[in-house]
Length: 87
Image (cartoon, rainbow, N blue to C red; front, side, top):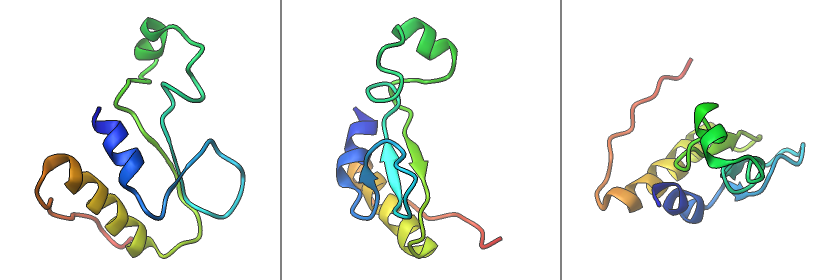
């Protein structure tokens, strides 16, 4: 459920499997790339139903962080505090 909220509330990340392009993507491995693997085996491998995968493209990193922040805030119903480093 939480993963679905993030997947449907990002504006810069496109929901898709990796296409090898330059745009940022978000995917849900449990229902996309790993959907044919039985749930028990997926979970044993760390591919849980709440896992989302990000493929970072060429967009401005600050914009991507803000987009994820906003999508996560939808789930919590409140603004979360951004914490990241510019390394």
